[in-house]
Length: 280
Image (cartoon, rainbow, N blue to C red; front, side, top):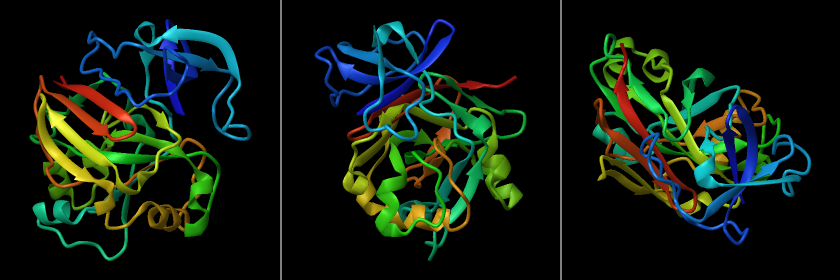
C-alpha cells in the first residue's frame, strides 16, 4: 500500500495511491518541476485522519478520490526528527577518504529541512560553495518505540520512502561536525509517498542529475542493515510515529548547481524529483 500526503487547494490530507482500477501498482511518480506532467492513470483516495496508530493496516477511507494530476503531493510525513546514518555503504566511505565505521554513525537533521516532491532545494550560496546530493532509502516509523530488539523491528516500521540527504560538503569539512552542513531548510526532500509493503533487503537505488545517472546501487550493500540500524538508534532515543531514519547513501555523490533537476528512485517505491535554485 502506498500512503501519500497531499493538498487539494488549501486542504491537506493523507490518502492511498492506486491505479485507475483501485489497486496499488508499481508505477513511479515523476515530478521534476512544479509544472511537470504526472504519471497518468494514478489516483489518490482520501483517508479519514492520519494513517498512524491502531488500524493503520486498514485505513478508513472517506470516499473522496482524486486523479493524481489534480492534487499536489507533499512530503509524506512531517517528522518530529530525522535520524540519519553516515558512511553506511563502503564505497561511499572510501570515495570521501573515510574509514568504514564499526558501528552505525548517527546524526540528526531538523524537521524544518523537510520538503516534498517537486519542491526546490535552495543552495545557501552566501555560506556554501558546494552542495551535494545523497540519495537514500528512508524508514518511516509507525509507532512510539524505544530499545527495539532486531527481531521486533518490523513491528515498528510503517513503511519506506525516498530521501535526499542534501549536504553542504564544504561546511561539513570545515565545521568538524555535521549539523550546519546537513541542517539547512530544504535539505531533506522526502517522497513521493510511503510504501508500506516493501521488502528493503535488496532493492535498487538510483540517483540522477538532469537525467544522468550518478548513483546506482542496492540496499543489499548496506554495511549495517535495517534491523541493526533501528535497534541501534532506538537504544539511544525514542522514535515517534512519523519519525524518519535515513539509512545512508551509496557512492557517487556530487555537487548540485542552480537549474539542476535531481531525482532519487528506489525500486518498489517510486521517484522523488526536485529542482535546485540559489538562495538570495
